[in-house]
Amino acid sequence: MPQLPLDQFYLYFKHLLSGLVMVGVFVAVYCRFTPFHEVRLIRRGCTAASLSLAGAIVGFSLTVASSILHSDHFVMFVLWGTLAAVVQMAAYLLIERSLPEMKQALEANNVAMGGLMGTVSLVVGVINAACLS
Image (cartoon, rainbow, N blue to C red; front, side):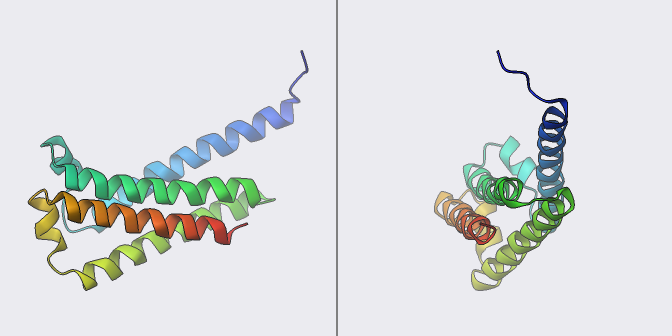
């Protein structure tokens, strides 16, 4: 069985833990950034809020994954991840301005609105991730 060099093992865990921390921080900031309480809504069974938040998380995670794949230096990985979070927040702001009824629709569990929000976040994440290749 081949031996995994210790430095490769260290880099694996460094990127894994950093990526997970970045996703956790993103979720915390994103939930504070939006005008509604996604976690509270999700706990009440609001599918629309779940779809919206899930799209943002997956979209952001795709960029983090692409950054891990394409960044030669750890600092660049962190910088690209930070920029990805900013891009996701900007996308949210654009949608919020385009659809002023979005907050009320999500709080009313409008699944179509939640699906739209999640899809837009996912699309932004896919494009953002591709820009890093």
